[in-house]
Length: 222
Image 1 (cartoon, rainbow, N blue to C red):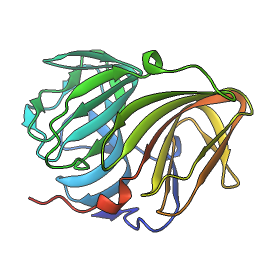
Image 2: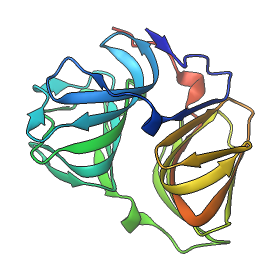
Image 3: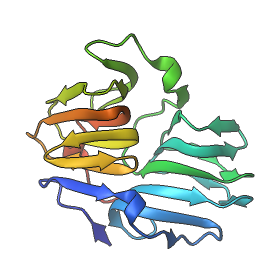
Image 4: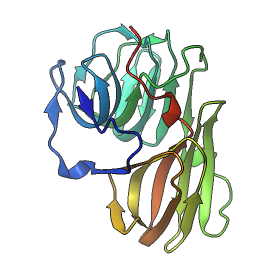
């Protein structure tokens, strides 16, 4: 399966407007944003766990990165409330679920195969002081990519021209970008060479951003 697999084009998905699709695990549904591959795939998705649902134990051969958007995600390592950013690199394993239900934004098979840095981070707790109406948290940075979280005051502009492509998920509020209004749940991917200029709406905005990673996009090597 290929979905939004042309990494040379601008892509916007208003995820709250698309249907949920059942996964192979009962009670776990997803909204696919981009995908290369079948059930083993380089994938970016919004995933919803019904109360009491869980996946069977598994190892992340290609790594897993996620943000908890709603509720509390759980595994044998602990509870992950909304606003938590998690990186589970290749070779890590767990049994994920949600006793009360949750929604996560998750990226699979997008790690450096040699990456072994596993961590969780409270995004809001990592924020620095605001500059020009934008407070920023550096969530992760390595030779392949930079991952950040930003809280924008009303009317504030967030600009980014990093090499290697730009990806943004609106976590709250709304921004204007490229002549479009991107509200909560909107996902944007800009190709190599494109610059981001996002202006927060009257209620401000919270956004997650990843840059530099698109040159490494490929199907899982299994």
